[in-house]
Amino acid sequence: MSEIQATSTRLNSIDVFRGLTVAAMLLVNNAGDWAHVYPWLEHAEWNGCTPADFIFPFFLFIVGVSLEFAIGSKLSTVASGDLWRSACWRAAKIFALGLALHVIAMILIPDRSFRLLGVLQRIGICFFLAATVLIYLRSTIVLWVFSAFTLIAYWFLLNSTGGYQPGINIVDQIDTMLLGSLAYQFDPVTFRAQEPEGVLSSLPAMVNVLLGVIAARLLRNKSKKTLTLVGVSLIGLAYLWSFSMPLNKQLWTSSFVCWTCGWGVLLLVCFHYLIDQKQLPSLGLSFGVNAITAYAAAWVVTCIIAATHAMPYIYPQWFVLALAKATSETFASFFFALLFTLSFGAWMYLLRRRGWRFSI
Image (cartoon, rainbow, N blue to C red):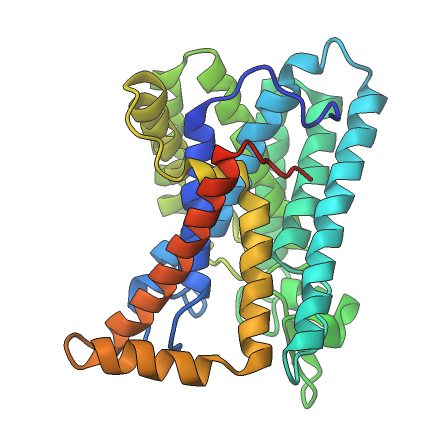
């Protein structure tokens, strides 16, 4: 086991938080009919923050919490170089898995082009950046200062280089220049690209991980009141900041970082109280133990369904005819996503019961 993966303290609340986040990710990503989706399961088109927009930043926040519990106690006993090399190796594996999933999608799904960046790639990049900062800066105060400087610098950069409009902001300009047709969206007419997990926006996304590290330190030190105050303060700061810098997941604005991390901190406090202290059932634990396995497996299954053209036969017969008349097409679409998610939850439960845990 690598130094990064080793940990002497494991809280069920962290696995539950991570697991419920992954389950929500599967629920959002696998609607039965994209023309009929509940608004709370859709991402904001541009500015704003829907419930679905919390999912990925929550996951990055939990990456930071886990990172601190994994290596925080080793900073004074293990050589920084050893920890950093271990972090580099793990980040590279996560990034490579993301690339592999996009290759699978390109091969199996008709007319699907290769995308260089994505969810796992951003996790790998942010993990690497945050781990490097943690290993070499260490001090909680320095982490606060570094995070604040990053968010403020990003705010000034966007304000001084075209603002926040699609296509003309500096984030999209850099992604167009560096990624081109390898981005999530590319217009061959205007030669403009848009990548939700782009290059420049990975810097503020890294702060989600660093704030997770800070939250874990407060949690470890039994500072739940301080942690709650931090969460409320981040939410208040985000609200005030949003008048100058809108909440925007596509650009991963600084206000969006504070908003999502503030709620992430409060949820962490709640999960810790309910699960670690009050011993409530650890719903979502199985997803959390094998989070990346669940995400990758769901991706592959989705690609296979698309490649075999099974959806036009399965969904209309089993879901639309059976449910839409009694309820609505939107509920039928949601119910498909729910069954998809629960199916993987059952599989992850079996893996956990057998003691199988796949780590990257």
